[in-house]
Length: 271
Image 1 (cartoon, rainbow, N blue to C red):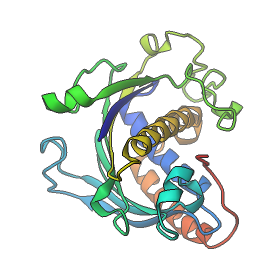
Image 2 (cartoon, rainbow, N blue to C red; image 1 turned 90 degrees about the vertical axis):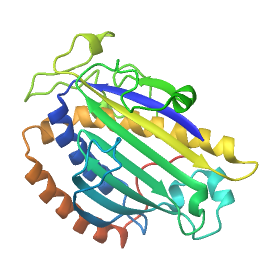
Image 3 (tube, rainbow, N blue to C red; image 1 turned 90 degrees about the horizontal axis):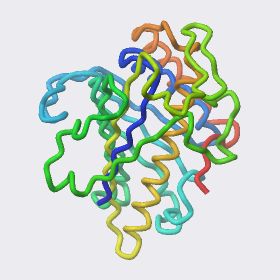
């Protein structure tokens, strides 16, 4: 088991981030779907009376259940291990904002030997909460804290887009950006941080350590690129309501169903 807590500070309010995150997830799903691969949304509905989210503090919100068809997006090391046809992963998510839990599994083949659990708390500060997930002492000792800077952390050349560079982006709607100050996390207003606790397990003798490190490296890359996109698309989603976002999600589901059946493989590459 490998546990890392990624802290991603954003020049947004907690309420703004909820809209931006949902909008950006829908947009990312479209970019990653085509040619028989991508995201299939099976359920997207409210839930209530769930008692195990952060020690029972969050009991209702929005539940989603998705299948990711990922043949070309599975790292080569993992493709080598898995048999042909076993490249689908399932994602269950309970969004009880400001707390969210996402669990990714491969029940068809790996069963209980593979899981990624991402627990996120969204909080109005610049990343200084020491144990926001209320971890017990034994897990705190295992946890590694990683601060991500959407403006100053480098991204690979194949990930870089000028339109998604916080050092270049200026919001016409809000006046925020570009984030050119090295110390921007301590000077911007509003400010909030996504505390993402990632616990991954890959129980396969001889491969566990390498694969768990690969998963954490991939998650870091995804988090950094995604949050750069959230900020740099601010003018596209700022001012939208949660009802408008839910309607957009419904439209996106129909579009995803069409995209998976045609076109070419698109989007994120891990190798």
